[in-house]
Amino acid sequence: MAKVEETANTLYQRFVDESTLQTLTNGQEVRVWRGKLVETCLDLGIPYGSYRKNVKSLEQIGSIQVLVTGVRASPTVIALLQPPTEELWANRTATVEKTLTKQAEDASLLGEAREIIQKLGGLDVEKLTKVLINLEERITALESKSKERNGKTQSK
Image 1 (spheres, rainbow, N blue to C red):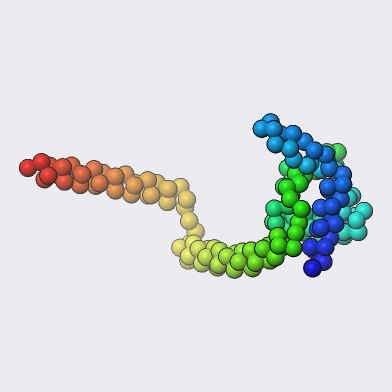
Image 2: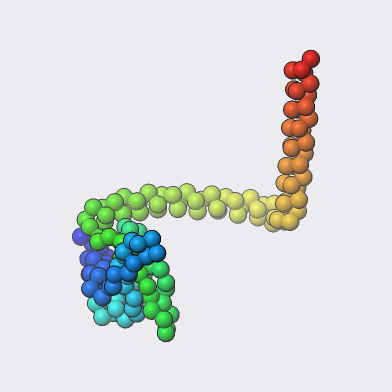
């Protein structure tokens, strides 16, 4: 088991130990943890620089849902959905690999789009919007004429 998985499991267990059972308006019960996230992580020996990585990992596998991100005077609120299991961690690893490939493809497309815009000397969004609206109106008019002609042809 990877270090992040181990520390995330420990963090989840702390959430469980300090959580309360809340009843939702639909009658469903859910465990909710309220507290100072950074202090809790530091108390568990999770370095300040990696506490978000642990929380994000627990979110990715569906173990928790951060409902409210705390700030100085207000606590972080986290719903505990399901305990992290080896199966969930294994599925996350497979999903992360697919996501990284998709992100690389998206970044490549974004880079190509930026390059095209740069070659065009920028992009006037307002002008482009007017052109697209005009094209849409013209296409709609042509479709209407086509339907009228097809209707007249069929009734003859």
